[in-house]
Length: 257
Length: 375
Image (tube, rainbow over all chains, first blue to last red; front, side, top):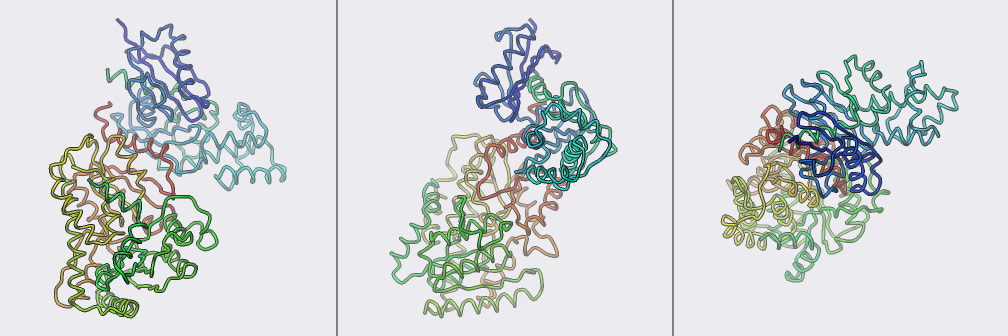
């Protein structure tokens, strides 16, 4: 009988679920806001992913959870941190020594993998949300631009506007002065993405190919080309970069049982 | 087994007040740094207590100490400004870093006590002149203590006090030695309670309890798994909530390099010849605070030796935010540990720590160390 596995990643912003078969093929996945009830949102994405995979709960052999809400789902067989899960999920697509940069809703991770896929080292942001999804959300809110429009706007820009600070609040203030100075909205938005990239590359030296993952990258691919331009490195993105953590969780639990 | 020590730590003020009641005329001296020679303080018949913070947000220090000075020194000053140490008869500091000195001078100004003494401990302890300099400073400190208390500090009293303090150090090292076992009979949290309580209680009481603990400890069975053996490295750290969290997710802290840990008690005073010189030598030779570990970095081989002796498989490096002396050492320590096969996790401490996000980092670190089980 075919065995199926689920990985559920309840992040600071979004809950993600992935169902795989024993060969690691993704049969269904779902994403929604984490909200205030983490168990509920985790359950909802799990069910949606099963529906897409045309499977019933009884057919799922093992479930692993990850992300901030990883301990909130009582039916999990295993909980694993998002560091290890991202490493595993990305290594599936790029089996070599790489540096993973995950830009999440509230934190950034820089994870270095050896050529055998083991985590050699990881760094996460300190008590500061600069360069994370929360930073971009705040700027979108302050500028009264729908979050989903930012990527297309930034791509229209032909200028590399530099903002002087990474701090979310200071940047919002600085943007006001750029607006007063007559800068175009698309240039300012691109400047915001440049700021995200600058913050990330300061976290740790990049080694090997760089792989970008996370919700911010999934919705704003302008970051991929900016990171490549600014570092002169090849930047790779796995298919569906927002579900990499959930996928990694599913792969890990599959190999454990 | 260590409940009494936790109790002393939690109720440090009640303990000191009780001590004064039981020692009529006895004085309590608040110490800002572990370079204060406890031998001299005990010889004067005075109880030295280490001034620590309370890990609570407060709104009293901002006018007195710069916001980007380390959270520990602000937390300490807050205790004084909030009159929590109102039983102190005096305060003293041995020079270590500017941040804690600011807490001391501000306390001196705003919470005056009958005695305050600034002890200029040399920063370059590796200088050939450091010992004679410190001996001179210890002599001046001794004279000041005599004048303050009216008690003459004879060589005999210094010898007795040295024995008292040495005994406590020796007993704590015996306890630490048991942590080298495959399954240590105690947690890192208990070790922390032991060392910090030794800094705020009478060594007579503390050593008496240690002797009792040492009889039972070797045969103690723990109702928990040891998990990953970790070392913890950093400045002042009495963040018990953090230690508890680390030890609840599959790890045991087996050794430390903290001034609320080994740095304070690791070496003894060897009485050879002149008593004050012998005591001064102990403070010159003790495991150094990074503010004094220059030009040679003697901390690095010392930390590595501790890690090896206690078989640590990883190290958590904590830093009190804005602590410059430790910031100096951190890149070198991380590199040195890595070179010797010991992975490390760096975390930045504040008055309170965000347990949730730190838990993710610690768990990820433990998964990294134990990767063979996952991949």
